[in-house]
Image (cartoon, rainbow, N blue to C red; front, side, top):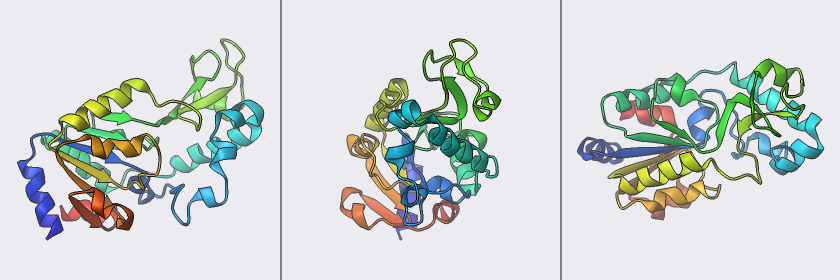
Amino acid sequence: MTIERLREWLHASTNTVILTGAGMSTESGIPDFRSASGWWNNIDPRTVATTEALAQNYALFHEFYKMRIENLAKAMPHEGHHILADWEKSGMVSLIATQNVDGFHQLAGSQRVEELHGSIRTIRCDRCQQAAAMEHFFDKIECIHCGGQLRPNVVLFGESLPQASWHISIEAIKAAELVLVIGTSLEVYPVNQLPMMTTGKTVYINLDVSQHKTQFDLTIAGKIKEVLQQL
């Protein structure tokens, strides 16, 4: 019944916005940093994915992100990513705002994607902000422009979200008739505020929906790929 109701809402909506999180990527083999089996249980993010680690423990910072990038190279978008891209092509989806840094939505063909936590697929200098080559980051080569340390273009703990993507996402969600929140625990501020900014219908799709049942018009518990395939 919930799948059928969402199907009806999708067809009726002329402006649907989607917000995705880590659960969208775990089915591609990307570790979920916040689940019970996530890496965060083994590596405290406050000691690695931070501006302090970048400045004070670059060796650990570099090792962590090099490992993440190498793991990403072994994974691909799953069918759920392609389904969302097909919805966009058919005019059913206006925008995808994502907390994920893996770029899978774009690889699957989605065009209108706002990366709220940046992208791990590109590198820049932390000092002068100039773009840098991935191989330079892998080899721990300093910035060729200023000698600064290289880093992925992700948002670290202690940094602000990219303002352009943030504001575009806010305006899109405010104007949406339907907002689908897919595969996020909604624990990270300020992105967890976005679903409540709409006057449209809200749907939450996640493996565990128990904590957010009262916040949404509709909740669907299940694996993301399977739910999207059913839709």
